[in-house]
Every structure is written in C-alpha cells, then in structure tokens.
Image 1 (spheres, helix red, strand yellow):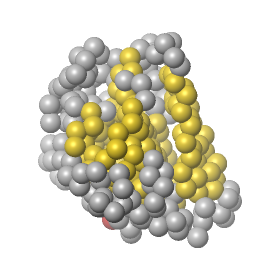
Image 2 (cartoon, each protein chain N blue to C red):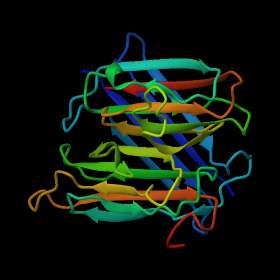
Image 3 (cartoon, rainbow over the protein chains, first blue to last red):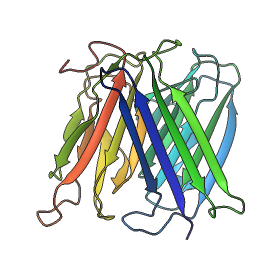
Image 4 (cartoon, helix red, strand yellow):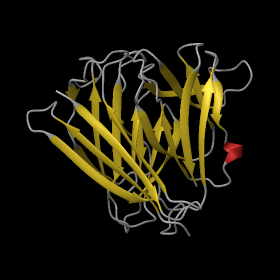
Amino acid sequence: MATTNATIALTSDVTDNALSVSNTTELNTAGTTTGVNTMTSVTKVLSSTNQVDLITTGSVSTTHAYVYINNPSTDETVYFNITIGNAGAGSPTDTEEIGRLYAGDWMWFPWDVDDDICITPSTSDDVTVEYMVFS
Amino acid sequence: MATTATLTLASADIAGDPVSVTKTATLTKAGSTNDLDQSTGLNRVHLRSTTNKVLLAANAEGDNLAAKVYIINKATDASLYVTVTINAQTIGKLYAGDFMFIPWSQTDTDADIEVAATNWTASTGDIPVEYALFHEDTDFLTNA
C-alpha cells in the first residue's frame, strides 16, 4: 500500500499571542493503518454559474476519502460555492453549502462518499478549479 | 495582521512518479485582499458523545462573509473517528490524526458545525478534538 502524507501549517498573528499549528497525518483507509492507494487529480475549466457535480460518489469505490479543492484564480472576486448533497437536474436546493472558496483558497476534508460534491462558480467567465481525491 | 494556511500533500508511491503538492493561502475577507482579522484561537474539547454536539454555532450571517474552520482529531487509536456534519449533512469522518480545513458559510441558523464521537464507548476513552475559526464579521459567532 502507498504512503501518503498530508501536512497543514497554520500561522496567525490575529491574536496577541501568535498561533502556529503544524500537523501531519498519514492518509489511511477507514479505521486502519493501511495507506490509501488511489488518487485522482483533475483540473477543470467551468464556464457557467450553474451548480454542477464536481466529484460524484460513483467516482470513488470506498466510503472514506480525502478531498482537496483549490481555486487558483488571482481575481479576488472570483469564488466557488462548494456544496455537498444531491444536485440533480433542477434541484440545486437539495444540497448543503459548506462554504465559499475565494481566489487562492484551498480546502481539505474527509468525505464519506454518501453524496456528491457540487460547485457553483460566481461568474460565467472561464474559471479553473483543481481537485484531488485520495481513497 | 495575517493568517496563512499551507497544505502539503506528498507521496513517493501512490503513483508512478512521486506526488508533491504544496499550496499556501493567505486568509482574506470575502472578495477582497484584506486579511481576516478575527479568530477564536485554538480550542480543545474531549468528546464522549455518540450523538451530534455543536462545535461552532451558526448565526445566519449569510454566505458572503469569509470564514475558515480547522478541526483535527487528536486521538491516537486509528479506529476512533469523529463524524463532522453541517446542518445534518455529513461531510466526513476524521480518523485519528486526520484534520480538515474548510471555508464555512452560515447560510442559515441550521448551518452549525457539529461533531460526534460516533464509535466512542466508555472503554475507548474520550476523543480529543482541537479546532479554530478565522473569520471577519463580529456577529459570526452566536457567542461573540
């Protein structure tokens, strides 16, 4: 099995005493110390403000995965609404918004692969989104 | 005043060639280049409930204010996990050592971030969880 590590480093001087956090985790299959062995890496260009499926449950064969999504835009007004649920045709309200990913932002989270991960760009101009899935 | 978040993903053998991705974000207010200027600081709680508990309460501030949430499961037993949900929608399970870093939109008062020590038992011991919120609006926290 493969060995894949994810490391986060957070630094902040918002508070009087600066915050510095660093943690590394090995990406394992659910509840084990066995490393994940599948990786998907995608760069996609979106050209509509429609909500669409970005990562479907059918694209992953396990019930535990790790997801990285990046907004590489340099225009600070360009964002993606990232939601989770069943977008379906004409039923975008059947999703729960996680948050807005503004230009330069990334997100990293475990995914239980029960519902699709959806995306809604803020503009119909061409915008690029990058994502990786480990499972 | 700045907050930065750097993620590094590295593997020598998950693909035919080594994988190495490093991305740093400077956390800014929504749609601007101004830094986020408020934080809860780093918090630690010990979970012993298999039912959902509110970790961060939503205040229906809308989705046009920037906020970022960091959560980590500090357990050392690989089998112990924390289920993270937003408005009853499961996001995923944080197993021992796993962390998440996500933007958070408070679309309504139901958009709480909740956690449950789903497979906790009296014999497993508590599951320690650490978390921090970085945000911009003074009303973003119901307890602010």
